[in-house]
Length: 356
Image (tube, helix red, strand yellow):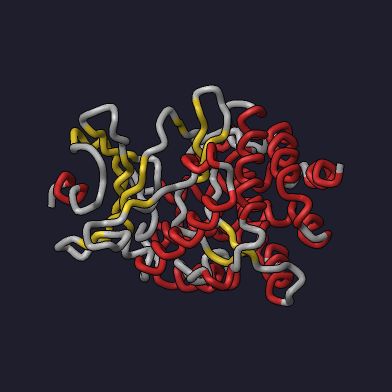
């Protein structure tokens, strides 16, 4: 089915001109739709991955609930920086094509850009402010209203069970190539479980969280000011540590997550300081002492679990993340584990920054 036809199933303004692929995401298939006249907005058209997301209507409902809630809370001048979904001609906020694929349409936020890695501490600080504000604004949103779009998404016990299953069925060649990473997971897994224990025993409260706050899910203007938090598919009940930790994972690394030269992968404490100051300035007032105390653990947890997910996908023959070559997921896993090792040389410094 042609993209123009799919686009025209929504109540958009303007006339289709061209579709430009956006290749930065791991999961969904995304296009920037340019319209013919300058008076009409451009749009983001996205095919949602039904292999990853099993209940897409619930996912869309999560987006509507949260974006409506946020739009009601912010100033009029800020409303355009909240993701705005466009209903289809059927009235639903998605279109299901003949292949049973689900599509949604959003207004493109103009004069914006994304970063795969932070070019400087200024961008890190601004990302901290943006993600911290997003988290703060959702403080009084009832997380119980959100469906789990990916059950047990950041559940380490579940990911470790997947890990054990992956090893049992993996091809010998992949097992051999991944041996170092497998041994690293086995070595670290028990100490990484603590955050899961604190969640399960109620020490850390469930909140409405984004759950995928990598840097590329923040939009910036051309001067480096944070504009919007995007990619809301994983809105779910979660911990602040998931959002804080996943941001630090990408913002405070010296390299993108598929850098294969591990000598180029190391932790950037100056970016951590800048991001943390921005995030906590926006959100510290709503956090408990236990939440703040375990933020560094949350960072380590998220780097570890992301590396584990890449490793699991490699052992499972790359069924989840998009890849560009046969060892892409293994490279990503090694990258994350190298970042974790570097980060653990700075744990005392990180804790001091959080409490300063």
